[in-house]
Length: 337
Image: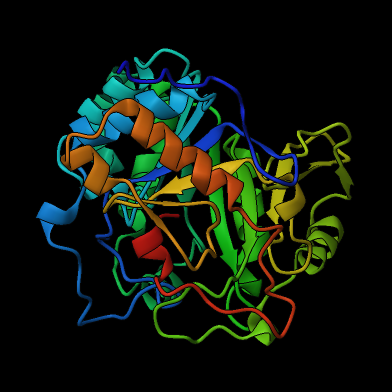
């Protein structure tokens, strides 16, 4: 009997959301220890044999691309600690149907890898940086690497990366002093800051809604201290960030308000963890195992079927703001940022 062909119908869930965006975690390891993400010591990482190979990731993406996935984001852990990452970037960019690839990084290793990644075809990056103050950086990350991060950002600008965006997690009682300096730094360097509300994805269960520095409060601060912010009309409704522009023309600012203003109704993203589990939501409790298929010799049709099934099971949205909310069993670094 002939093997049935893969259906190329769009990946649409039961709520009518079309999925064309895949986030790929390449490792759960990280070279910093942000207190709201990982314990300082005693972190148990997956065995390397459990992590998908580049060949396995490439094959999965080829199947996903045949189903309408066009956008990729490579994440971790910290993706730059994955050996030979530029090779994977080149492989993924070359896949037919993929027209956009970005990478999220803490940029500690960018001084060494910015050029190889650029040569591999990478252009879009998001740098995770919460503060420009060395002492506070050390307090947050438990590493004294701020100079390396700033060197990496400068090198990326010199090489021609763009757009460069800066992700800053907003935690009440900690990062208020950093909001304006981060915004000014980005204005001066043609970078778009993205302030991300603190989410319940930490490994130490320290999240509390009272610790969330709300997007509206940051907007008020920047409007007062720098220039009034005006929401940009006609933005892509599926993008996680709500974008604003300064009234004085001095650039843009994005806000990912997952807690105060969830954007689940427009979500178009799937996530592949570094150990080969497919997730329809960052906060999902259940996962679909694709690694077993990739390593078991399953045909592409079987992998496609799992992707479609995962999309069809997608819920309406997380319930952070209700008593029903249950944190995912994995912390952020094990899921993929």
